Image (cartoon, rainbow, N blue to C red; front, side):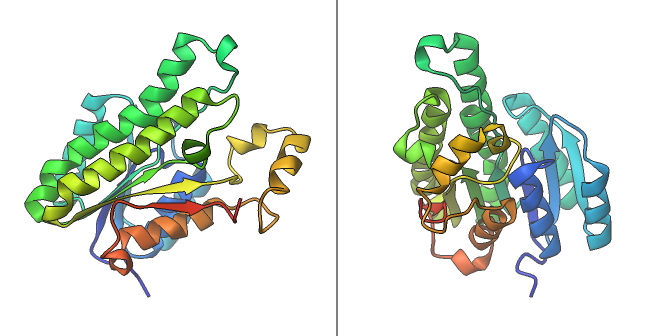
Length: 244
């Protein structure tokens, strides 16, 4: 059963990790997808999308740039005629204790992880308002809910995503535009592979399911929020953390 047939989606940070899994999952469920990133699409991802027979288009863009967000939104409307779904997934980490954290490390994370959500939500808003329909999904984190030592910049950005999401749900709900966030826990991505084995084991002991999650499991959560299965869900934070 294809849950997104006829839908058009924009996914930021869509070339790797969770973003790539979301692009591929949406494409497998019938969506046309425009996805962004700072790096080019890998041959493996291109082969997967070709095998799916999906209409997916990559645009190189800086998520922290408002001009790039406007350019991507305009390109999506020109190519597909509408925008039904936005997934604000782009994110980076610059971890470190606050006493050693530079202003640059703070600014980089806030710009990519939080400002990008503002940039793209604003860029697609006019189109969705005209359609009187849309689903905006923003990736937060369990760090944005509970905080995390050594991640003051990342946790602040991801907490900001939650506050922004809840505010947008109230602003846009009367036009049938839903806004929700996903808060993943420990997921097997390039970001989490930087953890030491000891750190990974310590975190896994706090997870009820006693394992690390996969990008595909987060993508399935995004699929639910993008589809009509969640037609009466807005302003929510879905925690996808295996019971951490």
